[in-house]
Length: 114
Length: 134
Image (tube, rainbow over all chains, first blue to last red; front, side, top):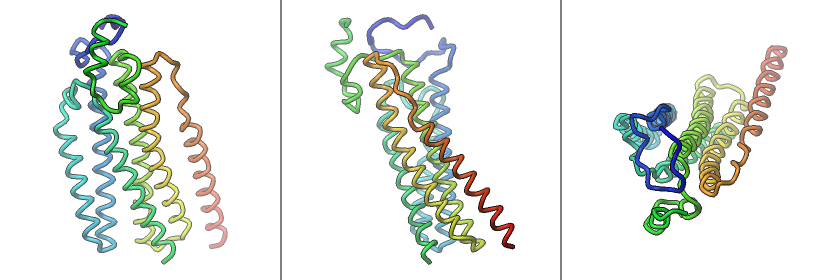
């Protein structure tokens, strides 16, 4: 890819000629993150089962299933789409981590005071 | 600014407006790199949260010390803070790139390094202490 044109002409995705494979790397980063969410949800679901809290387990499995589906559907460089709108996914992703963190804190505090 | 830029700014509806409403699009590779950086921070936070939850579960299996619950809670709080930081840093970096400003420093990096070192020291001290009282 040559030097980018000055200004902000609408740009498509970094095409197959992109030597840095930027779009692929970004898609893989999304996949890793989605898999991380799946793992976190698996841990939470196990904790829910362990504490005989089926609601927590079911919620964790549902969120994990959504993230796993997203990771499987993410074709390299195709998704998230060429019109970059990362905020729409970053925001719920970060929100999910914060909710997970709050649940973890509650679980830890409940166990500590018991 | 070039002609297509002005047209873009008017028809651009990307969110958040506080980012896409200022400056002009940087090289798409830089935006993608910024996105990956945010995702890496998000994964770091996620790892901390998952570790904290796993630690709590593990502690309840083996009926371990309350100290582990404190560590787990701190890890979860830290992970949540890192997730928020991922959003804040993405927004800040993207704004700086669009405006042609120098990038702000990765301010969470020293904090997380101090946190990991402190964690290592606490766990090491606990291991020595619990070994000596056995």
